[in-house]
Image 1: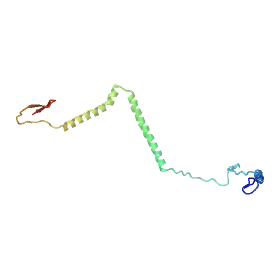
Image 2 (image 1 turned 60 degrees about the vertical axis):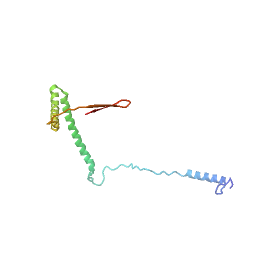
Image 3 (image 1 turned 120 degrees about the horizontal axis):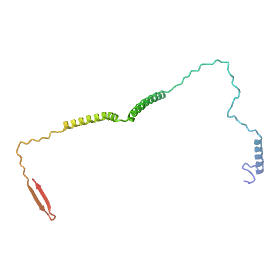
Image 4 (image 1 turned 180 degrees about the horizontal axis):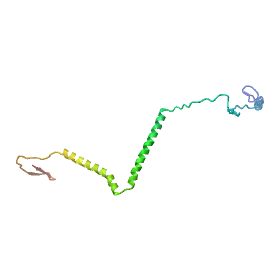
Length: 160
């Protein structure tokens, strides 16, 4: 293949002239812009010929959303009650006197006393009777036999 010719057999100078002509032809054409949005700037009429129509408001709330709303209202009301009760208790404990401390601890002392009494009664009821009654004469006979054997003198005592 000749280095002065292109792949389709056209001489290099003719190919350059053809390329220049195509580029100039393309540059002379106007660029077409395609709009991507449209804005109508005409003023809408203040009123039309048709009568206004009542439009119903039909909002659909899922059951789980309504349940969560009701539960959150209930939890909020319950927490408010607990908070008020705690506030009242803490207000009472803030003015501590000896009589107040005794009145607060008195129920706990009563419960502890009852628990101790019940535990003592249960332990006495479960305790076994261990009284041993002997009806024959008792003889104590103790004999000690000592044996020593071996080089290192092992001692063995038999008590009977």
